[in-house]
Length: 370
Length: 157
Image (cartoon, rainbow over all chains, first blue to last red; front, side):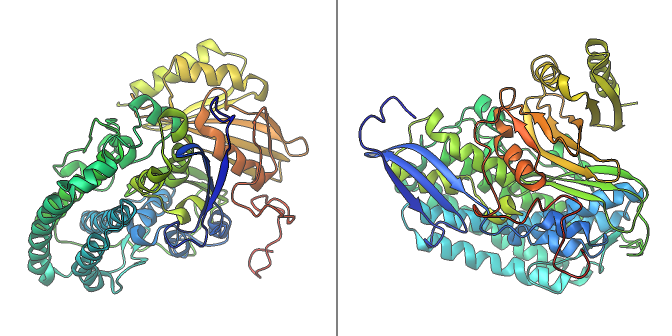
């Protein structure tokens, strides 16, 4: 493949049983320390969600689609629910939209914390950071339990609104949790982002230039880590994101450190968004009832949602039945994995850098497999 | 109101490819759908990339219209400058499922074309590595996303 591969090329198979690989096998061709090829072999968790959704009505469909990304279920479900709402031509009540934004941003925090802990492990085995981030997810999971009834996999969004009202009496507890979390974020910055070891492992490793990021199709924080300010929440505001003041985080460097830094700063923004949403939430109804047996009008809708891993789209095509004729999900991790596979072609990658680069992209293989 | 950019894009495509475009419409703000004759896919794709700056590939998919005996291949494209999503569609007969691969125009379609190939049995001519992506290597069950694929569950069959 490469001009220097005339020497001995060794192929390393990483996963799918390796504890750090995830549900994936990654083939790595190396020439000494230098990596020539990274080939992600995905599909170990393919469940045919697109096909399943052709056999579910729009209320049932929320449950299987959430299985794509278990730490980020709200954002995934939202893209499906929004596509159904667009076909039906209904808009949920304002209060429901605020509740959705709160839950989506909590999911973004939960997801970033998880990915961030894994990345810390990949950067040289820092279980402490993983334990911290796991522990800091707890207060948010408790809050989610109060709102949705379950700690994760909420199935809480439904075409027309949300299943239950936001309990106003937990507002104070919510705000106190945000305050606690802001202190924790400060601790992460000191203990981790200013850590010499982390800097030496992640800085200047896996540099992705902005033009390559767009050409290869990097998604979400990985795109913004290369300085490209694309964020569906700003470009095409959905729900009430246009009524909320927040920044699109970008970092110009494009290395692994920058991608992780984007996620860190996005958590800071998410806290700001949640705080505004809680304070500005109007009172009123939280759901317009839509019967699961309602026939969908003939038509199509392509909804875009900025999930924690980047833009996810659901293209729903209806032929007039109660179930969609076809659902196409455009998955951010599938695009990100293609970028990972091309990294050795655009920058020098050493074998020891492969886990750092991979986890700086925050892959979620069930998202790619669907 | 608000759809100036979208209309301009459609005008530009229509005036340059009068006979290649079967349909072109603004579905809603920031959503464009164009249907192109299959033999003109290359020319239109290059035009979209070079002149209209649709530089980012979101995905590639297909729809099985079994009653009309056709597949529709859909490229989901995004313009990173205008932030408009364009669905580039082409219809191909169900019994001759071939369409040119657009990998020489957008490198990022690589995985998505492979997935569409294994799920629908649509061959992307010119794709350098049309191998299984999500299904097992020894899969012999047919093409799962075709409408005549039989599910083992009671509801699907």
